[in-house]
Image (cartoon, rainbow, N blue to C red; front, top):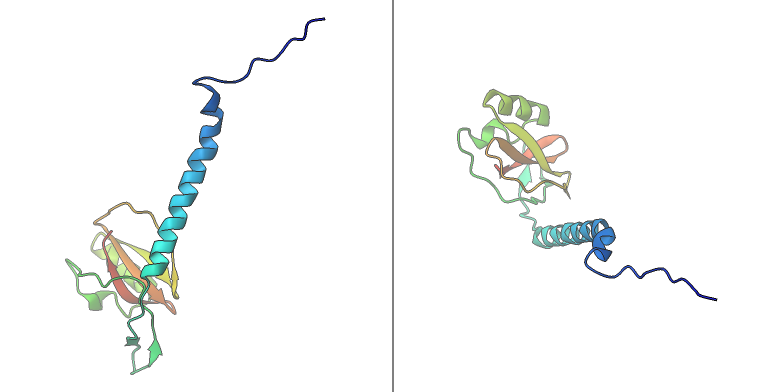
Length: 131
């Protein structure tokens, strides 16, 4: 009696089935590293904000950007909707990179037409640059 063996799946094409799993595992590791690095770089400046001398502490989780084509006062301290209206008037968009102390997951593509901001209690507390 002869036993028929299935051929082993060895050779150059054997690992193709594993590429999707490997790809997503690599992406997950990269995402975790980015999050850990961002978390390690978080620093609080102890600055305060508010209209009438309010003393609520805000932890700034992004570096202060230097605006080109507008003033910080055009967006900082404004409600997000007002900042978005202003940005639209100068052919820009607004992206929130920090919301109420929580770093947001954002793409790393560079766009000069995008204003990145930190939002606390619905208001822009920091301009984080164009990226």
